[in-house]
Length: 312
Image (cartoon, rainbow, N blue to C red; front, side, top):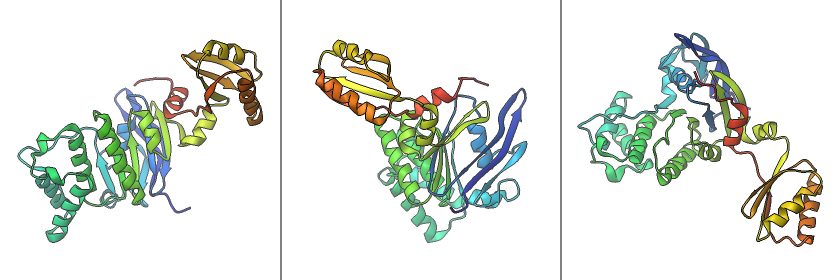
């Protein structure tokens, strides 16, 4: 496996009366999308700011493409695109002028600057708003402009802090597709969000932190296995849910039957063969089964299982 693009090693950061980050370590490969999850005050934004060279740790280091953010911050910054959780566009600039201002700040000149500005604006769906005041955009279009500004210098690592906050469902879906396209192009994306179902659909892996410490990390599938030791099964019947409940309560390996209208959810501690036999017995008993499937633990379930809700 190639060397990771992002390496966080033993990161610590304290403020008066608060240990924001404590001995935090993780890494990311190129082209990966990693979800950064934790309760409010868990240390996510502090960690992201340190990675983005906007804050200095008390201990530990971060390397991006092998460059230390402490020893070689200028080199590291060339590889970083940081999208903060708040977006405050400058007044008196339209969309293209705003992007052009930052392209100049990144050192782009002449034809390269003009082409880059239009290319990034096109990718983010902003060309039709090119002459609109940057301060007059909707929340969704504002986030697109924020992302476009982040992409101007073609960074390898994108750090997105709550990018979908306040967006309507359609805007969130469109933003999610943009993130997937960026990862498909080879960029790594570290993204924090409190919209956990959406984050779970987008990410290859996740790291959960609480009170500045890593609680669990890895692929969502691997974490699911570690937090869900029994199979959860959903049974949906066309009618007679009460009869289905009585049936399940008499079956081996079945525990904790919960009824919600025509849907019944239960825990099953048997093997796959036993689960298939259970379905066959349900049909033979006259239940009209229209859905029968395992319920995988989602990111919300992982979050609730691995954190205690401690704030700081």
